Image (cartoon, rainbow, N blue to C red; front, side, top):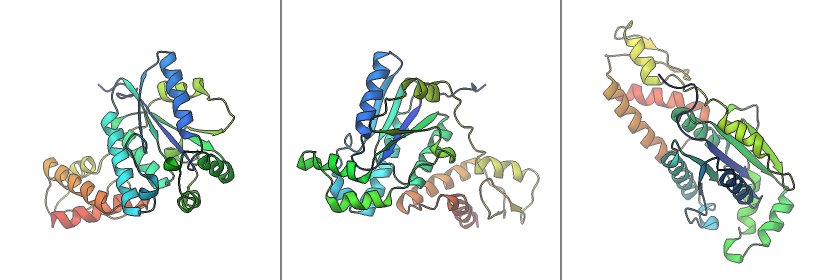
Length: 262
């Protein structure tokens, strides 16, 4: 029987403007976790992957590839022993939702740390960096403009810790959020919903699945192996054709499945 608490250790997500103090917060949290012997820490981020910021963030295709690489690295590192920290801009609401879906699937608690700074302060900190580590002013301004601030009313942005540059790290509250809180329950999968519906359906019926407005047109019974194959193909398709409109993903899968089974 599955435990009420998570199988994997938590994911801590940083977000904020460029040069808003995210890596400093990561270092603080990592040091305190190690000092207290709480857990080992694994950090995933732009610097760890050796990203050329000005090149990547000037090209939407490269940026999408980077987000995919970061997500894959997070998924690979989640385990029963270590805390995983994602140190990147994470400025897109849809991407934070993708990460939330990941932690739901892996039954991992998470929290979000938003490093609050003004564009002026972040720009000043950017200019103090070594030239090879600076964002160009054009890229910096574009990223600030595109930033989608987190909102604790969104389940994927909660629990949310919004920290000003001089705020102390709320270590105890962070630990409570990630170590003493249940992981969000997984959604009923489309495969499970469809397999259950087939027990009382006949070819020609329309099947309702969780999270989608459109319905699956059941022309024949489908097995789990066929559904899993379709799911893998759909995931590969969405990686090549990302859609930032998170509300449409379930409908897209239904449309894909309808085309696949006819």
